[in-house]
Length: 263
Image 1 (spheres, rainbow, N blue to C red):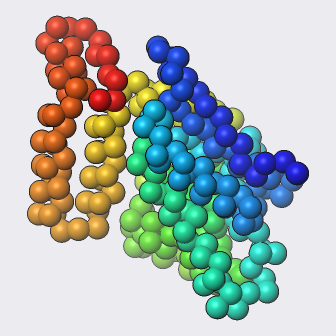
Image 2: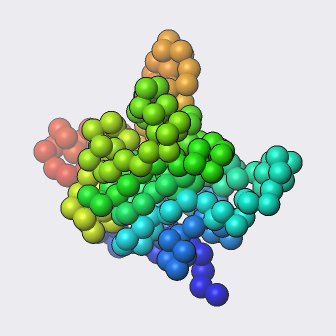
């Protein structure tokens, strides 16, 4: 059997150090339907990456024609409530969300149900023009259960999230862009290329600042503004004890390109 997730590393353009990890969903024969093997492999990879200081950015993608068409219904059809609780499907995407490095989803074709939830667990979504997003769980008599209501409402607001979750409607990439669900729409077939361009730019930057920015943005959305501002100030001040801060400001004053080392 082929591996459910293919793992590739990409080197920094300038130093040759491996700094970008590409996780590719690999069940093309079933449109990357998300069974337990694939979920576990992705969560395991996410947990390993989280501990790797050398990794600066992560890209998650599917095939050229589909990102992930949703959960493998064979996994769910015979379960009762207790059985679903025992599966704990949410924890696999939580592992992706917990990666401290920036994570980019490169989406071609369908990202539906759990596939859309996976994309939303990432920090950015680069969508090909053929990408399609939706939470069609209601058509099966259920609802999203791994972030599909909560991340959706935070991304696109109450009215639009209600519309998608209650109707099971599928939207195209242009609509997803207009609603703020995706970061960028590119030509069909170019999502991975563009995601890697962004990842390379991030990987060449100050890694500790990137982690601090990600942490502040994620935490701040769920706490009162005064607490979020205090957290931001503390993280901002802490970065002045890093070598990359010294290098970045010295390079600016000396009118040269900074040599960030993630220190």
